[in-house]
Image (cartoon, rainbow, N blue to C red; front, side):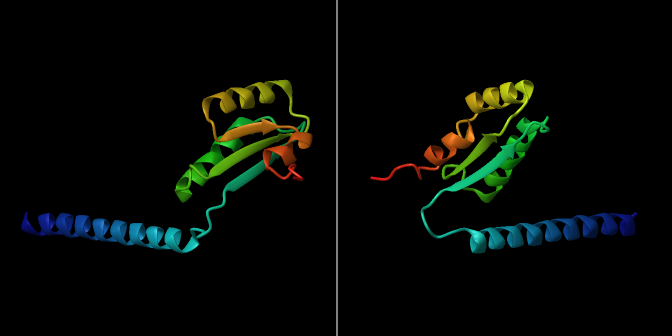
Length: 119
């Protein structure tokens, strides 16, 4: 009985040790890759007529930005380049639920990125 207990104990010890190493490497990489400037992240996802599951692409992009830890400075823009009506309705519903996701046309993209100001 004692050797089985030791194997289980050592297995748990190695598991938590590896988990700690992976977490430490993740935090170190995020610290190194994190930008120092106070800018913002914008991910633009174009959606054409053949794009049927645009809402899942937007959610995936939003979750990836959340993994970076800068949710307040990030924004996901869905670019409507002829989306089907069902995909457009899904994207509009998603935009109402999450404030960091926007749906715009190619003409509205410059204004959404604040490049339209020529003052």
